[in-house]
Length: 149
Image (tube, rainbow, N blue to C red; front, top):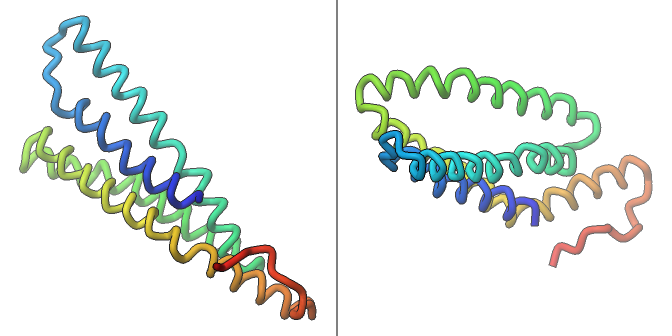
């Protein structure tokens, strides 16, 4: 169930982030404590997908393509880290801070849904990789470790 954990944690991150974006704390101690708690919770929820996506990638990529797959993942991840704030800055200029960050939460929701939907394909993909490895090793008639039912 790693895809469910990954997708749901990405989507759940949007809830505390929504409060961080929208609550007007106006310098009050209670407001600052609430925003700090919400930011901590958002950070805590958003760390789950990183190790899970790399573990899933290793399980669904053939050994000879894992390096290339990890490279692609790192490139896309780095592009997101660089281009995300760059594009968001233009959105802030044109839409305002709150609207721009609210709009960016839609991207998190879409990403969470995509990760959540991976649940339906991961077992089949893992089995396909295991079968290809067995074929290469000449062990095709042995049972798979993954139950596809």
